[in-house]
Amino acid sequence: MFGMEVINDDDFLSLKLALVTDPTYHDRMIETKIIETPTNSDSSETCEEGKIFSLFQTREQMLKQLDHKTDTETLEEDGKGLQLIHLLLISATSVDENNIPSAIENLCELYQNVSLSGDSVQRVAAYFADGLIARLLTRKSPFYDMIMEPPTPEEQFLAFTELYKVSPFYQFAHFTANQSIIEAFEREANTNNRALHVIDFDISYGFQWPSLMQSLSEKATATDRILLRITGFASSLEQLQETESRLVSFSKGFRNLVFEFQGIVRGSKFARPKIRKGETVAANLVFHLNSLNSYSKISDTLKYIYSLRPSVVVLVEQEGSRKTQNFLSRFMESLHYFAAIFDSLDDCLPLDSAERLSIERNHLGKEIKHVMNYDKDGGKCLRYERMETWKGRMENHGFLGIRQSSNSVMQAKLLLKIRSHCSPVHIDGENGGGFRVFERDDGRAISLGWQDRFLLTASSWCCE
Image 1 (cartoon, rainbow, N blue to C red):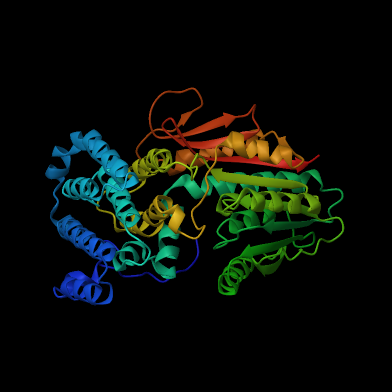
Image 2 (cartoon, one colour):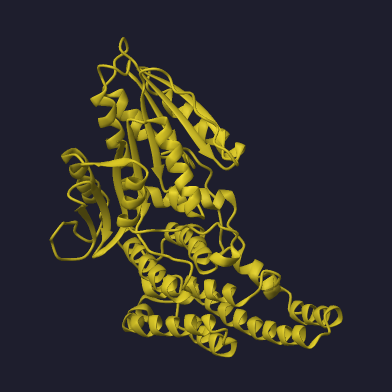
C-alpha cells in the first residue's frame, strides 16, 4: 500500500547470539561473575546461567538446521503436534514452579523437535519456548537481553506491512471500523457541512486511513468536496511525522478531498483535539484499549471520549482472556490464540516464505515473548479481553451498542473470500476450517475467527 525499503536479512531470528561466534564468551562471563559476586546465592545463579548456556546451544543447533529440513522430514513429523504441545505445557509448569532443571531438560527436548520452517505447531512452540527461557531469567541476565531484544523499527514495519498484505486480520479490523465511520458520516449528511473528524487514539503507521479516503472520495465531487480531519495519538513525534507524511502523500491522489492532520504525542494528559461546529466526530479505538496496563487508564480514556460526545465510537480488539494473576492460565489462553494465528498463516503463505518468517519473528514472536514475561515488561504487554468484558465496560461508561449494518457484514465476508487462499470461508453456523465471520451480540458485533476460535471483534457505539 505504501512505498517501503526492502530489508535484506539472512538470519532467521534477530535473536542470533553473539556469544555463539565467541567461544570464550561463556568462560569470561562466569569468571567475571565469580570475581564480582562471590556469595553462595550468586554462585548458585552462576551455575544456573551455565545450564541456560547449554540450553542456548541446543537452541542454536535448531536454528542451524533450519535450512536443511526437507519436506519429507516435515511430513514425518506431522503426527507429533500433540506431543510438542504436551512438552510445552510440562515446560511451562516447570518454569512456573521455578523447577529449573526440569524446565531446561524439557525445553532442550522441545528445541530438538521444532523448526521455524516446520508446521504451525512446531513454529509456535519454538517462539513460546523462547518466552519461557526469558521467564527463567532475571532482567540482569545477559541471556535475557538476548532473547528479549526487540526487532529494529524497520523490521517491525516490514513485518506489519507483510502481514497486512497477506492476511485478512488487520484489514478486517480497519475495513469494518471504517464502514461504521462512513455510515455515521452519512447519517449526519444534512448537518455536518461535509466534514468528518476522526480521532485515532493509536494511529500507528496510519494504514487504516487510505481506504477511508478512497471511500469518501467516491462520495465527493470537485465542486462538492469532503473535509477529512484526522487527529492521531502516538507514542513519539517521529512516528507521527512519518505517518503524517505517508497520509498526506496518499491524500494528494484525491482532488475532491481536503485532508488535515494533527498529531498528538501521548503523554500524562490528553491534549484535547479541536472540535469544529457541525462536523461528524468519530472516535477510533482499534487495538488501543488493550495496550493500557490498568483498568483506571481504560476508564479515564472512555470518560474522556464520552466528554467529546462523538457521533460514533468504533472498538476493535483481539479476543482473549489473559489475566496476569495466574501464569499457567494466561499461558494456555495465549497458546490457543497464537496457535490459531500461526495456523491461519499457512493459508496465506508457504512454509518456505521469507515473508512468513519475518511476520512470525518480528511481529508475532515479539508479542509472544512479551505475553510470557508480562511481569518483567514494564506494562508493555497487551491485556486482551473477551467481547463480553469490553461490552460491559462500554455500557458502564454510558455508551450504547449500534447494530452492524448488512453492508458491514457483506464487506467482511467479501474480504475473506478475497484473502482466503486455500481454506474455504465459512459463515456463522457452518462447519469446517479456515477463516470465519461471526455475527454476535444480536448483530451488534462482528468477529473474525479461524476455525472455531475468535481472533478479533469489531463493534460500534454511541453516547446515551
